[in-house]
Amino acid sequence: MDVPQISVNELSNVINEGALLIDVRDPEEHTTARVPQAVSIPLSSVPDRLEEVPTDGPVYVICAKGGRSQMAAEFYAQQGVQAINVTGGTDAWLKAGYEHLSGPTGAER
Image 1 (cartoon, rainbow, N blue to C red):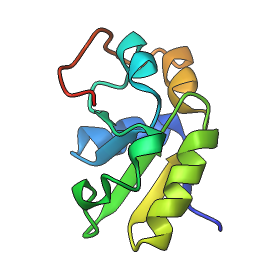
Image 2 (tube, rainbow, N blue to C red):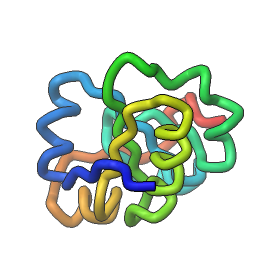
Image 3 (tube, helix red, strand yellow):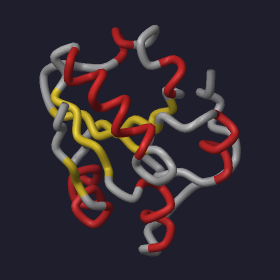
């Protein structure tokens, strides 16, 4: 299934406007470095936490490089979510020099 793709440069614009960004990496990866606005929903939890994902607008999905987020975005799209995959993932975000956070957020499950 084809899902829309977005670059980290485009992502920086949409998240500043309040878009939802879901980080599907494992909790340990999420605490190492993350996009500040990212909500942690590990890939293994995506089906169980579907009710947390809105269906009334676009949802951006990120992982380390783009593979796991592609799988999650495809799943979300099959469930009626307007999911958009972030190409290059968090690695590209960090390489581009965008702001990031590290350490626990208290929200990891």
